[in-house]
Length: 266
Image (tube, rainbow, N blue to C red; front, side, top):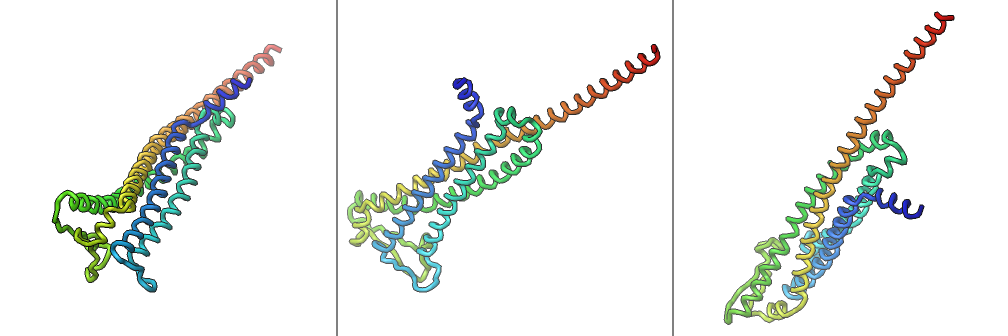
């Protein structure tokens, strides 16, 4: 009895939704955790090696934008933790085990609408994560350029290479915040582990955003299959209702004729 119970429980687990949820949680965790630490490392690099300071008052500078991005990361982590749970619950309610317990009618009446709603919502989230992936590639590109300049400065002797933050829109045109290979701050920055760590953290955050996109695509396939399942179940339920009604009518007609024959014989 225990073995049969375990087999029944294992048969009711939505493995496709479980795999997509694990991939989603892993991607969101990598993006949020590594992205948060990479932003903190970026603040330290700007303050230490580029000698940038926070603007006084309510001025929207790069440091304020980084703080906003951190709060957005907190919201993304909380929102997709809840969303993953909701999708898992939806997967459980479209498995055969729930169907056996509650019947076709309760699944098909609300399950079809729920599946369609989740398909639309997941498609929107997939597009959003595509945008997040594209946006996350920007700091990776910036740090790759900085890492390339550090590498070329060590290979080519006497090369005077500079990195100007105005090229990336971090500071305004009127400000001149740049470091060159001949400066001492640039040499310290290239030799520090902070630059290398921040660069790799952004790469991992980009990989996490890509994993979240794959998870959204996986969810779309699962939800589409679930929607087709409940749609077929709804049609089957209607067919069973019509068939049962016709059989009842035939039974009533047969009973009526039998009574009429019995009365005529009597």
